[in-house]
Length: 513
Image (cartoon, rainbow, N blue to C red; front, side, top):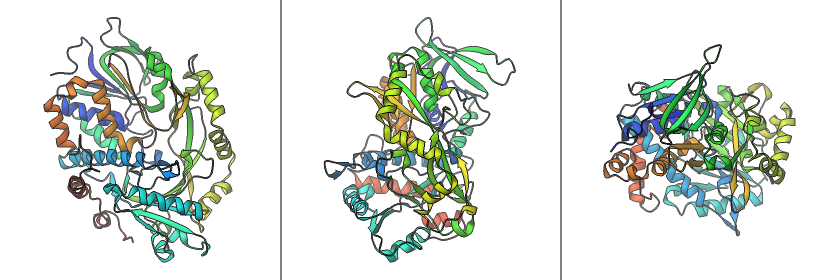
């Protein structure tokens, strides 16, 4: 059964922008419907250089192992429902990536992913008590069972030499550590996937092309896009009709949704936030730290403010990143325009945008404080985690833009979202992803859910289920409920992706404890 050719459209599928979500959807479509014709449009001249690029995200491979903001206290107990969901999703991503590596989709093999332990580190009686309860609650799930909790100062100094040196010996400190952790170069992964797609004669990739309008076609069977060619001085435009359109452009999907005319497009607004990090490439320092270490956000601080000191492996080179530092911006993308935020405002979302800003005063105060911070202030934040940090060993780097989604919730009116939203038109000819953390790490599960929502009848076919199960053995199953299957899959993916300490040391010089 074909998905697209029953429509009288110029092309079958249009994917808007070259990010990891579009790449993932493109590969699924080519596996499930090999003869599908795909056209991909991007404003820039290269793949994956916005949110997907290595330095534009934390690269954590978010699996809820160390992110303390994923486990809030509810009714006096640590709520682990979000980690339970996220780790299953990340395991699906690893299975899919290992399938692509094993079947030679990528010229660089598994270089995009590395073994990096995930750890949480907290200070003081209240946070230590929280971490202990978190560990007890999470390790009931077999997928978190190997996570280790400790307050042992000798072990902490061994695990966190940079973070424990010169620290007050009487200070109460606790940590958890998981060996399942990873560091993922999502930029390289995205480029590898697009390189594969570009080799297919039915996939056409267009650069310097911006979608400026998106309407329902006059015959109501497909979508009509207005595409501006940015490579010409005159910036000529043309029309493209497609049976199915996917907006994988994060916050930039908001103005296109509004223009599409679908009712769901009126339900969203966007508030952009600028991201920055401090980076250290001094090998004498970098070699002393190996891990993703997440702390706890301050009282009243928003989830995006969770501090972390990360080992990053980008193009075979290790660095240390500390952040995040945020600020206000009106751009939806690094290569965006200062008017992005204003052009996304319309009569449906202007008042809710103001209301959400007033209601979320901690976020407003946090952004103002971050904007006013000087270098000394940023270094002071770093020294809370790394007491010996020196100014000359670090430089500041702008990370990707984050557009916090504001959604019309019937129960709560308008609310600020910190999760990925999947938007599908009633006729299922248009889909969009408005995504935030954990985003790229859970891209495979998100795209599978999008496919089921956009093509429910076709995705129920037995042959397509079997194809997906070959790529993702846990598809339709719960790894939590089947520890034997979880162990078997984990052993296989770790072998294919070289996710072990021993294999990491073959790729990167140095050994770590």
